[in-house]
Amino acid sequence: MNSRTLTSTLLPVGILLVAMTSVQSGASLAKSLFPVIGAQGTTSLRLIFAALFLLLVLRPWRTRINTGALGSVLAYGSALGFMNLLFYMSLQTVPLGIAVALEFTGPLAVAILSSRRLLDFVWIALAVAGLALLLPIGEGAAGIDPLGAAYALGAGVCWGLYIIFGQRAGAEHGMQSACLGVMVAAFVAAPFGMVHAGTDLLNLALIPTALGVALLSTAIPYTLEMYALTRMPARTFGTLMSIEPALGALSGLLFLGERLSLLQWLAIGAIILASIGTTASMKSRQEAEGLIPAD
Image (cartoon, rainbow, N blue to C red; front, side):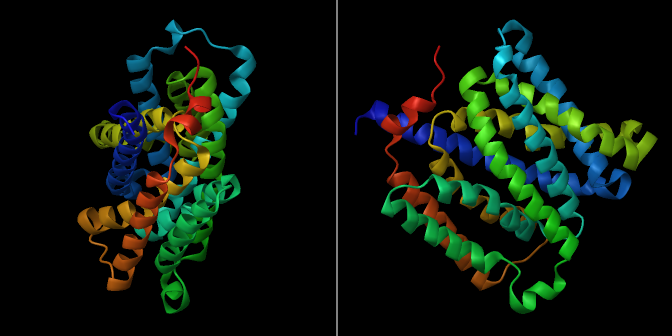
């Protein structure tokens, strides 16, 4: 493998890891807003500020938009909006690491349904084994709120749709899809936030934290994810996202004081190993060529 091919393989993977780390850090910060404006209000502010930021940076009006392909952008943005809303609602009663693990059922399903080679299933099986150790099973399930868990699973469904429609939107509009998708997501989430939080959304003291959440949880990671989505297969993207529960648990430990057991750390190791394995077996350039949008 020459240096150019190696770069084309590792660059999207590295960018995706940065995006996931940013999302989990932002989720930890977002919980500080819940007592004031709730999960719905936090989601609304996050997406509105993120949309404004991406408008200023990407300036989509300078790019010709294919109106015939707007359906994919609308579906991508709607999935993004509900994914954020449901995930934040789950965080009100479910620990961050467990919420991410439950939400991961969406991209894991995409990885399984997109797999063709036997080796892919080996890495997916290892990821599933690690994920199973992080899920609230047996005695651990008693402390998990059923409604919060349902919200997290619903967010997982939306996450799977986000991957599918995000890949299509990215192929049609490139990086501008991130901006357009977040704008749609903001319109989807805003009514829920306004109904729940009302005039509290206008509290100027919340702006610095809301801006931080918007940048860490939406503007930065979704722009980076759009780059990665269009440069790797859906099954590779979905399997690599298996590291998300590990990052969520780590963020919960560092920022929220949520401690993990030895068994949970072993689960994190299995998930990371699965991610490394699927990256090593990735036929990067040949598989990615069909996903890179034409200039």
